[in-house]
Image (cartoon, rainbow, N blue to C red):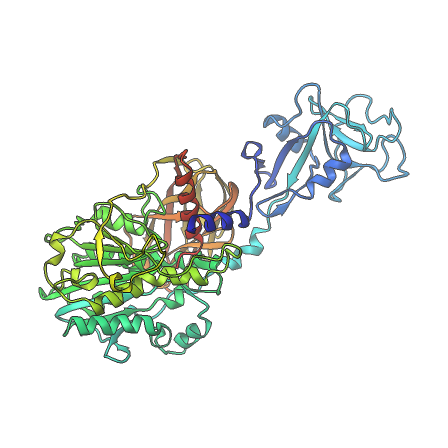
Amino acid sequence: MFQQNAALVLILLVGICSTGDLAAAPTYWLANGHYYERIDDANVTWNDAYADVASRSWLGVQGHLMTITSSAEQNFLANNSLLPPSGKYWWFGGYQPPSSPEPAGNWQWVTGETWSYANWASGEPNNAWSGEDRLQLRPDGKWNDLGQNWSQDTGGYYVEYPVPDYPAQVAQYVFTPVTGPAINRLGKWNGTSFEAVGPGSITSGNVHVLVHGWAPGTTQEIEDAKNGTPAWDTWVGDKWKELADTIASKDPGSTVLMFSWVDMSATEDSPLCAYKSQAKVNTAGGLLASALEQACDFSSASLKMQVIGHSHGAAVAAKAGLELAKDGNAIQQLTFLDSPENGLIPSGPRNMMSDYIGSTTVLGQQILDGTTFVDNYYACAGISHGDIEVSVELDSPYESYNITNPLDFSMFSKHHNYPLEWYTNATQAMTWEDGVALYWSPLLGNQYIDLETSYEQAWHNPLTGEFIPTLEYSLISGSGDVIGIPDTLYRDLRAESLYAEGTVVIDADNFEATLTENSPACWHSVIVVDENDVCLEFAYQFLEVGDGDELGIWIDGELRYLAVGTITGTDLETGCIDISYLDPGTHLLSIALHSTGEAGCSFRVSDFQMVSEVPEPSVVVLLIAGFMSIMGLRRK
């Protein structure tokens, strides 16, 4: 049912800048920043061509029938193989209004531009057939006049797309910097609520860190946070407090922390806004690592840590684990609860899950010095990674989605939250002897050593369709089958630099740029996305960094990646943006440097590559791919 629902949603979603046939991609002219497209449409009339152009756009800008207002523009067409093929004429945007003197009087452009240049063929215009009041381009580049309803020997028409007004858009690439000490985002469970955590106050014992995911519809909580009220105190809700209380009761003497990034993960209350939260997981993970290093004494041999992340919070937890490991502060356990990052992006790109698991020695069955035990529970948005962790496939008891209203995600939320609910209740219900969930933790003992890599619930009676409550927390060995991560291909990004604002040094041949503080400095480019492209991978490095310096990457005017200089530092980093939701065609890639603090920041972005799935012929795999793609739009 999930796959069917995702397929319907995919049909409903429309990309911002889809242009259809990539083979007819417009050609860019640097002199005026316009794009030119030759449309093949045999025997079309000028009137039909004029009407059709109104439905064509490029980078969100509506096209018009091409105008040629200079010899340079005429030469551009010839030099870029844009002239008509032999034996055919193509319409463009010149015309005579009614009652104009014939044959050469009062010619005008459809755009209203001044008529100051012409390239007529010998003997033209001649109004030979009477009523020749529209303009055609011949294979030799010369112009001919012909009637607006003439169709014989016409091969199509030309569209010109004016440059978008980028300077007017620069304001939208300014974002509000992340401020305040990272430790203020931590709350410590005291049995009834979360309270502030002091620097260096956690020096020993087991530490369990809870990380929430996407926070749709949380406007009031954001305002409360701005006014000084910790966001975790007003927003986390009963489900997280129940988990905190359960862990505290089952692991007496431990410290339970809650990390809030609600100000970064909050969006409008719409399933199509999840990407706004996803764009911030990299930054939130860095903040979590900083907060934990401020609060905890990692030099203490007795301090052991588990980080539990739900949904986008799993990516935050994994990023924090990476940053802590860089500083020699490896954590003992990562717990993923329905992480939509699992398998959604191929293993090659650096998504949070693959990056963490690929950069550390992670074993599901045993734990060695410096390694991390990973357990992964999924019911809706996640999948198993395979034999590198302990994965548990949960069978959610909630009714299926309403297929007639696929954008109503009330049922999706219940399925998606079930792993969090199950983990809490299983920990509460079980004992060490027959336990699961928290009882697998290396912080509590060594039961994890003998675990298999795959488990599943078997409490759903397939004959009656009923669930057996007494078996909800009993697990059986899984089949070991894993939804395979598709084979992938890397290719250099097909892109073209458009416009720079501020201090930007561009290497167009290698598609890289260095942006220097000029708040903001922006670089806009066009990228071409093919049907099987799933993510955009790139490298970036802050060359100089100070307080308040941030890098943002937008696609079609929507923020997709955020990096904070003081969190990232000056290391060379690799970023990855999920683009599986984009329609094939051209899209606007915008990169901005914004600073509100110390002067002198600069960063370089480079090594852009597009990663594509190798298509699978299996219908089942296609359905899974569709489901995974739609999860990319509504990850929480």
